[in-house]
Length: 162
Image 1: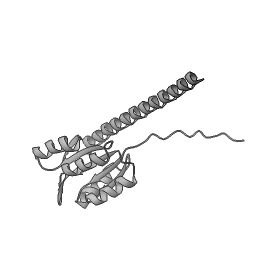
Image 2 (image 1 turned 135 degrees about the vertical axis):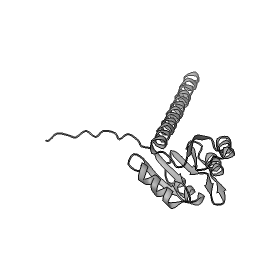
Image 3 (image 1 turned 90 degrees about the vertical axis):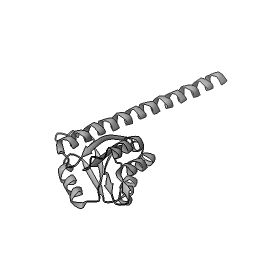
């Protein structure tokens, strides 16, 4: 028989949802980040909910100025339903109240300004994804400790009863 090829486990990559009502901005974001990330886009909150319900999204980046709703409000709603998702606000305006609202209500991990610099956004994505994975690892470890403790308690009860 020939040599067996060893398949290396693939390193997970960030899955990003970029929410912006401007189609050109969505296309530019996809073009800039699709090579090293899974990128989904949405033009409105309804589209964002569809993606969040069907995909495991790690990072959401939302434009502040959306028709009918502010990005900081969107991030607050996402935080309620999907607290593990890392949230970022992007805006072309220097609206300090938007930043304050996004931090207080939406648990924003990064504030990004438009026009955005691909290197800065890429670094923010990498940092947010590392934070996401660290939290997931910590949650899995905590759950394994809880499960081990339950097993030990069960074994102790069995031993005491016999």
